[in-house]
Length: 140
Image (tube, one colour):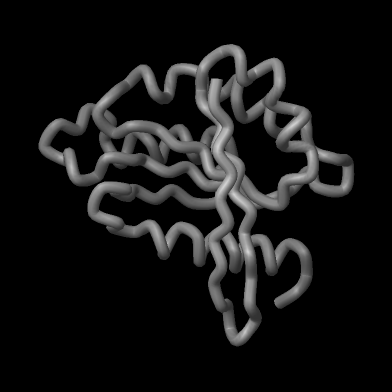
């Protein structure tokens, strides 16, 4: 079991923003400890692998657990869905359209695709999330 924490600092319209990112695995064991780590979240990113259908198998359960763990004043926070491994696009099994349909079903704010290997769209994802959080928190 592994939980990673990272900080991403960016500037949004001359405002310095630090995102504290808690990276939790999708293994079943995390479902039981999930609420302890997500209650004060201001935003969420749900990752899936564009080369594996199984990576979307339990998204409904994870979204429900995430939303239930939020403190009462944070029930409507921005949640993004991000397809990873865009550098393996030739091996894609989850179409963008399929992922978009899932995102609409669960009221996901926006869907992105990225590659951690090449860095494609990584900055765009965090900038969009930070702007969305600032908007919800009424800072912009």
